[in-house]
Image (cartoon, rainbow, N blue to C red):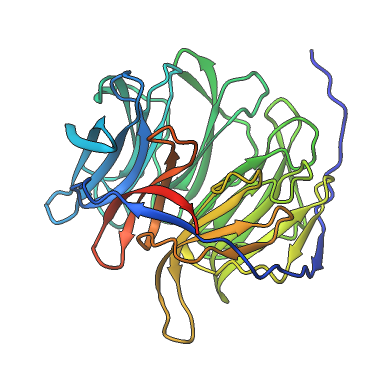
Length: 406
């Protein structure tokens, strides 16, 4: 039996004010307009090498809600040369409503498989889950008798919960009309998973799951945010004992939200995991940034300049290659000055965890966004694929080339 030292997470709230720098360099992107992507409601999209030829192609899952019943299609686009993509393959999968799509390598063979959750109809329907194996070159086959439980409007996380150097899976959502649930699946190798029946996590609705080693004890802890069946917004922190078993840490400082996202990242380079939460609660939308003091004690930064949104997504990435993490945020912004609408915003980090909006990014504004990053042309910087619900069009997917600092 393995033995672990016992640690205590002290999750307290200190409010601090940090002065901000005022000059940032614009990070510019150029839309690759030669590339066009067809589709309707876009559920997820990622870069991946579909044909093992050494360059990155694109895999996406879209739905056409104008048809009855709704149709859902896996589409792939092959990278042929110089950031040029062509429609490669199309496969129709299960017709579901209220669905979520997760693109993840389930079987460790270095390609993206698909988990599809949703329901047969709107309203008080039971959640369903379907699994599709990638058999190469953008071809998929349905995996029979999946162990993954079905949910509606699911949240999803991959993380090594039990310290055995493979990725386990957590899925949360609505089992059947305001019946929140959550499931943890242990990866037992070769694409096989076993559901843990004793995880002691509480599921929430319309929420998010984030995992990080909050207290620097070498295992992954869990943050769950969302609303319960009575529409109370909650944020729950769970301490991992090192073997994938959890204890809830009461009285944590985090605000509960729904239609949200939350992500851990080391924003100030001090070796611990800080936290950004963006979403909506009864008082409106929030964007709360917390710094970790390496002991699991979090400080709310009250002067952060990140805009509050709902239907949000958060992506930490070093855009400008200056060795700190910047932030891309998408979502629906509501303000009192009639400046409402969907937003895609890049916030640049000064290296100390202070963020400013980068001017002139010129990216499509989306809500319910999915972003993926890759160096498509091997020039050492991050190009970006953005998909989601757009202001100008019902749904959109755009590819952008990173150019340079002004």
